[in-house]
Length: 175
Image 1 (cartoon, rainbow, N blue to C red):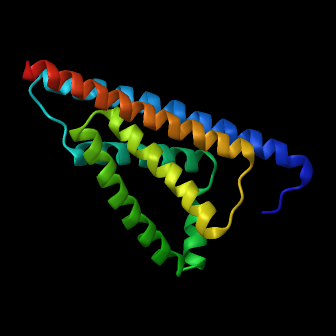
Image 2 (image 1 turned 45 degrees about the vertical axis):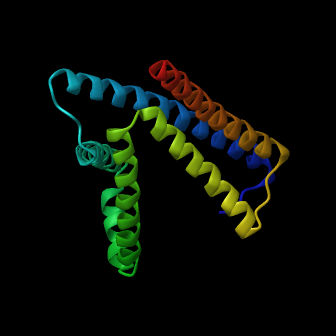
């Protein structure tokens, strides 16, 4: 896809919108997961990582099916796969990678606080960006580097706050 100069700023604005939307959804998801864990613990249940994974994937499958039906893309997608059978190997590889990655994410959510999961996924995203820049020779503007710096500062701040809180609790217990 080649973008014209005039659509470049529109593309950047759309990208920023999607990044902000992703952050908002991460925040909402973390809050919902925390509430779900609290509600389940009240009735004596403990959510298992694969419970989260199963129900999230069922929900996303339904949403994807409804959207593809509404847009009339089900048959187009099927036809593309039928015309390009080699793509199924890539789909299976992507599915396996996705399932393994989700396993780690949902394990973290089920056994730790959703904030820990958010910190882990944000850190992973930052390292993915940096890895892409350094190994593929991609360039990033000063605005991009500022964003990376802010994200790193946020993560360092969260880790520092947790370490400080942990030390305070340990010092109170040892007294």
